[in-house]
Image (cartoon, rainbow, N blue to C red; front, side, top):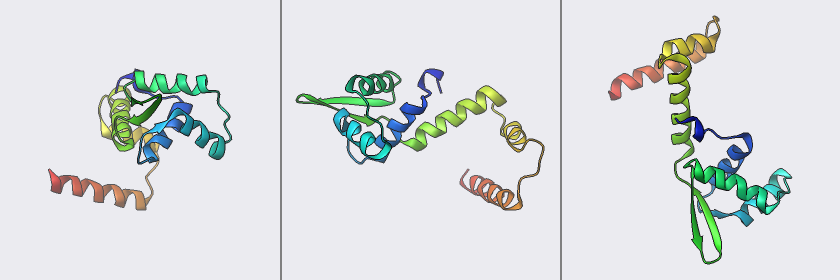
Length: 129
């Protein structure tokens, strides 16, 4: 994933709301949501800047309906997360899952339950390939 597509904390919060929505949302709807549920009283220009950045990063689509612009994600949260994980794996661990797990565990053993889950997942991968 291109570094330019990585999100700030606030951009992530906005995307979470949009990912959970079944329909595109306007900036006014987003402002209402953040005021009611997150205690954030943003000015319209502040939210507009975040939405513009997310659109420029290719993460949002904006669509004008009359005088109102609606925003919706261009990919699911799972698709975004997968791309981000792949980028980290490639950049930090030269694409090696083994090196990643070694770093993740920091030299300690994974708990038995996690090892079982990982084995099960790997077996599923073998069955589907």
